[in-house]
Amino acid sequence: MKIAIIGTGNIGGTLGSKWSKKGHTVIAGVRDANNFKGKKVLEEDQILITSIQEAVQEAEIIFVSTPASAAVEVAKSLGDTTGKIIIDAMNIVMGRGPENFTNTTDAILSNTQSRDIVKCFNTTGFNNMQNPIYNSEAIDLFVAGDSERGKEAAIQLAKDAGFAECYSIGGNDKFELMEQFAWFWINLAMFQGLGREIGFKLLKR
Image 1 (cartoon, rainbow, N blue to C red):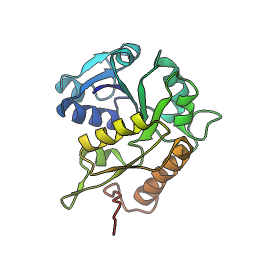
Image 2 (image 1 turned 90 degrees about the horizontal axis):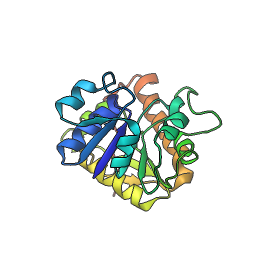
Image 3 (image 1 turned 30 degrees about the horizontal axis):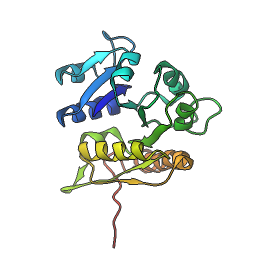
């Protein structure tokens, strides 16, 4: 797959590096090629660095992991996204999100041409992107969206990043639920004192 990473911080940089090592073509779309988060890691992995719109034009999949408050601005900066899959990994934290939206994915959907937009990679910490293994077993991820091709791509990329499974929890109407699930992890990790080294695993009887 050809993947544009928009937002090269902890999550975007970590996953971009992993996907590149799995054989995907990863392009980092940045505003300033001389100064951006994750620069050293991405350059070490020989990931192409270019402008945001150039990365989007080259890619099949656009992975967005920027501050949630910038969701509308970032969506508008992508240029023409017709036919592209967009994976949103953002969460509104402490009320800091796009104005007039209850979640970041709806904000992207309202400000881009693509209809193939899903939410994934937002329900756990970046430490679990780096290492999803607990006691020799990989934890799970979850995805939501109406787009079946978008969900298929996200599920494959989750597995390529080392997660065991990535379960669909429904369509676009579950975007907000995905962010609430992220808050469940944040609450346990930060406010209940369990720390970041926790993850979710769906068990079946």
